[in-house]
Length: 405
Ligand SMILES: Cc1cc2nc3c(=O)[nH]c(=O)nc-3n(C[C@H](O)[C@H](O)[C@H](O)COP(=O)(O)OP(=O)(O)OC[C@H]3O[C@@H](n4cnc5c(N)ncnc54)[C@H](O)[C@@H]3O)c2cc1C
Image 1 (cartoon, rainbow, N blue to C red):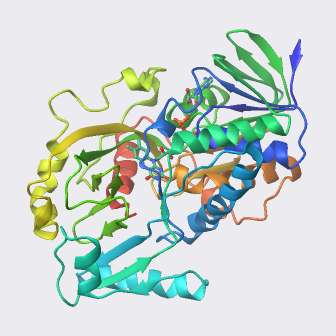
Image 2 (image 1 turned 180 degrees about the vertical axis):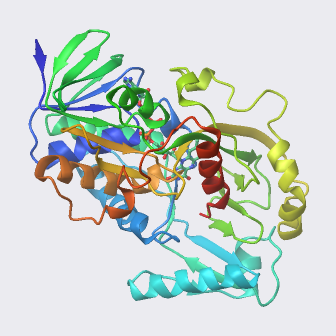
C-alpha cells in the first residue's frame, strides 16, 4: 500500500506553500494531493494584494515572510515572480479612520518599514482620478504591491518538488482515516494512502474533510469580488494601489486598466456542504446581479473617485474566501485528532500570508511548535460551533464586511 509521512490536502496557495516549507525544512516523504489542478480554486481568482502592515499584527508577521520568500523561490525555480512593487497609498478622512491610519503609520515606522505622509499635490500627481480633502491623512507604503497568485502557487509547487515533495493532481481525498484518535491515512479515488500526519489546506471545502472526524472548523465560504475598468488615459501600471477607508474601497493597476474592490453591508455566504468541486462552474453571483454591489457602493465611491465616473467597467471576478468571525486564520493542530493539522480560514488574505502560513505550519508539523506566535489562529478558539448555522454565517459575513485592507 502507498505510504507518505505527511499528506497535504489541497493544491492552492496554502497547500503548496506548506508542502514547500515542509520539504525545504528537511521533512521526507511529503505528498500533496489535489483533486483538480494546482491553483484552480480561490488561488486563481485573487487580486493578489500584498501588505506589510495591516490592522492585524498577528497576520503581518506571516505576510512579511511572503515578501522574503519571493527571492528564495526565484533562485530555486529560475523563474521571475514579477512582484509589482508599486506601493500602497492609504487614505483617511473621518476621525475614526484617521486614528487607525495613524496607528498603522506609527507601527510601521517603529518596525522599520518605509511609510511616508504625502500631500495633496503628490496624490493628484499619482492618482489623478482621486479627490481628497486637503487635510486628509495620506500615507504611502512604497514597498507593498501585488502578485499573480497563480504564478506564486506554481512557484511554491515547483520549489517543493525540487526538495523532493511529491505532488499528485487529479487525486481526490474521499475521507481522512483515524484510528483511536490518531491519523492513519486517507482514502482517495485511487485507493488508500497510509500516513500519520495530514495537513488540511482544502480552502472553502476544508470542513467537508474535517467534520466527519468531529472537527468543525470555525469558517464560512464567503463571496469576494472585484471589477475591472478598461485601459484609460487616467490609469497607468505605475500607479500605487489605493486603500481608501472612508470610501470602503481599494484599487490597483490592471494592465492599463484599474481593478476596484468595495466593502459590502452584508457579504454573501454559502453552505460548505453544497459547494461543487469545480468552483469556476458555480454561480457565486447570480447572472445579471454582477453589478449590484458596485451600484450599492456607487455614491460613496463616486464622491471620492470622481475621475472614475466615465471609466468603462467591463469585467467582473467573483470567488470564495473562507471567513472566520474574528478575521483571523485557522492554523495548527486540530484537536482532538492527533496528527491532524489545518491551514484554512484565509479571510481574503491567503496570498499575502502564504509564506508565513507555510513556514509556521511546517514548523508545527515537524517540531510541535512554531517560531511564529500562532495563538490568534488556534482552530478551537471559538469552542463548539456549527459551521452551517445562520447565526454563525452572520458572524462570518460581518467579519468580511468589517475587513479593511
Ligand atoms: C475575488 C477574490 C479576491 C481576493 N483577493 C486577495 C488579495 O488581494 N490578497 C490576498 O492575500 N488574498 C486574496 N484573496 C484570497 C485568496 O484567494 C485565498 O486566501 C487563497 O487563495 C486561499 O488559498 P487556499 O489554498 O486556502 O484555497 P484554494 O485556492 O481554494 O485551494 C484549495 C484547494 O483544495 C482542493 N481540495 C478541496 N478538497 C479536496 C479534496 N477532498 N481532495 C483533494 N483536493 C481538495 C481544491 O480543489 C482547491 O484546489 C481573494 C480571493 C478572492 C475570491
